Image 1 (cartoon, one colour):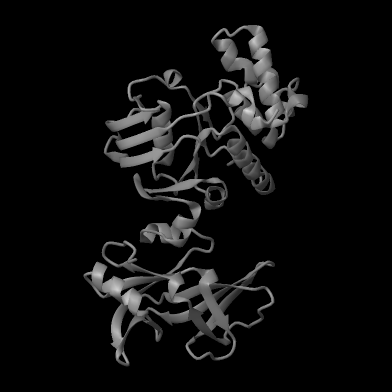
Image 2: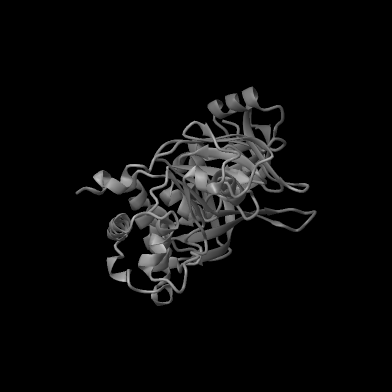
Length: 384
């Protein structure tokens, strides 16, 4: 039987709507007027730094927190006043919270025993879940004899066995080592696709978000900054925060001002000798959408073309630092220095590992106009 036709899949469906949800803790606004629609069978990742409100929002959906304002709907039904048990949502925590004195079988079966489900049905469901998660041989073990990845599967099994309408996961892979996290990312995404389960996943790790999400909801200071596919969020950030948060290394962001140069408009990067020519199309966007000539210029490291010899349109700078990472080189390129603070103004560029150069050598930089970004310095919004 195909997993997509497996009986355990039948009830794994839910559409979740958040309408103007606000949650406070005293004077602290943890979630601020958040609006979001999560489609049936979608994998949405709440991504942001610690304290941005992503876990509070997840707990509000689960019924573990109650928002002061706004509404939460599951399949069109307002659930603000429903208890967690009545929302039919499964929560997988960062700490697996397995019962140490119970076997894997009994840990998975626990929520079914709690509602006094008949024993034959419990056995059937546990075996179904164990087969899907490939943990049949672990059913007789106790948690102390499991690896981190095995405990994660058991925690997922305990959630799946209830056949809930949606999964809510709060950094479930935070306690795994780096290699196991890579393996579990692909397994979890594959499992979600096969089951067709609506899933909300909370993380501060952008690699997890980029590799697993159908859509990423980027949060900061309790607010939703951007919602979109991983490609949309990475390649077309809507504001300065998203631009700086996504990517490793993150986007290069340098202040600048648009000024005339040789009869054309160009962006002069502050405290440097760098002038970046802007296309007519980009200048039309600036004139249409901006009230100022002061901007933040952004370009990702992989979109900087670095040459050791002078190019026709290249901008001259010098190498400040080289990080040889094996698969790539990350080169810090010195553009200038702020005379007031002494802070160095740098670009970080990603090059092929075969690109050899020494610290202090001159380089020439080129950009493809379609890969550079401008942000209004006052509003911090992207100028499209």
